[in-house]
Image (tube, rainbow, N blue to C red; front, side, top):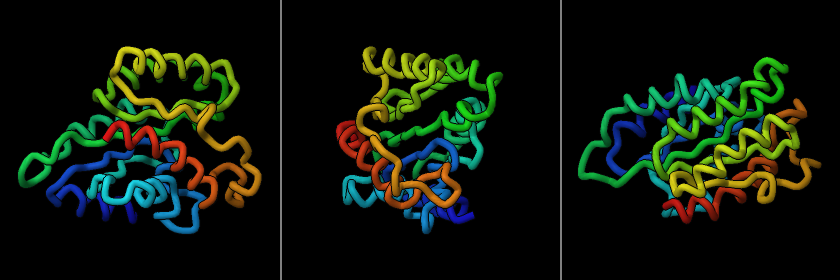
Length: 197
C-alpha cells in the first residue's frame, strides 16, 4: 500500500524516474520499515545522484515472467514525466528467487524466462544475477552475461558482489533479508548503478 501511494505521487512529479522491478525483496518484506529494503538503502547510498522519483512496480510473490508479462507492460504504460525531458529512466531488476523455490516445473523454465526478460528490458537496465548455485540459475545468468557483452544491460553480479554469508542478515521468516541483508544487497548494486547513471 505504501509503494502504491508513493508511485502515484512519483508519476505526477517532474524529473527522472527510477523504475524498480522485482518481487518481495524490492517491496522490503522482512525489513523493519518500507525504506529498510535494498531500494531505500541504495537511495541513501546514491544521495543526490539517485533519481528523485521512485516508481516501484514490484510485487510480493512475483516470478520472472511476472516481470515480463505484468510489470514491464505497466512500466510501458506510465505517462511521460511532466515538465522538461529528465533523461532516460533508471530501471533496476532483482528477480528469480521465487522461481527457484517454486518447484521443478517453474525452476526448469527459469532460464527461458530470463531470456525473455533480457530481451524485453530497455537498454541500460541494471539486472542482478542469481547467486544460488543451481543449474537453472547458472543457465539463467548466462542470458544476463550475454546481454552485458553486447552492451545492452548492466549486471550486478550477486555471485561475487552480494553477501557471502546471510548469518545475521535474515528476517524472522528465514527467507527474506532483514535491514542488514538489504543493506548488503544495496552495496552490491551501488557501483553498477553509479556507472549506469
